[in-house]
Length: 114
Image 1: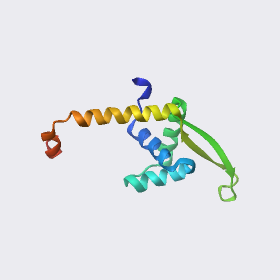
Image 2: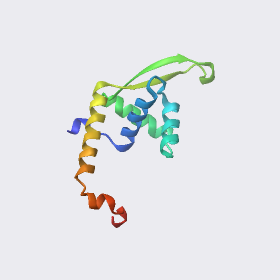
Image 3: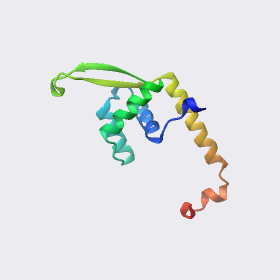
Image 4: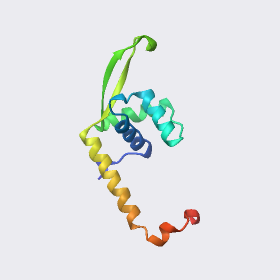
């Protein structure tokens, strides 16, 4: 279903938000991705993904309290919506279906032939 399609980075962002739960805001999401995946996540790419996911209805956000260290700007906290959870379930089922369709001999072989 096209309505559940997301890119790899968008999927990673949504999964990270699920991990962080109520502590999911820009910097915490970025740090979690970098720590867990040893992968750089630029703040620009992250914010673009957050905006796209919110526009698709997969995320919702709310402003937190402002803090002195942020010069009065409040953090924006994110959570995955029910539609976002359906999208993640859809993605997971599709990946599991593809992995299970690979013959056992191919799974045991090294993927160096690709």
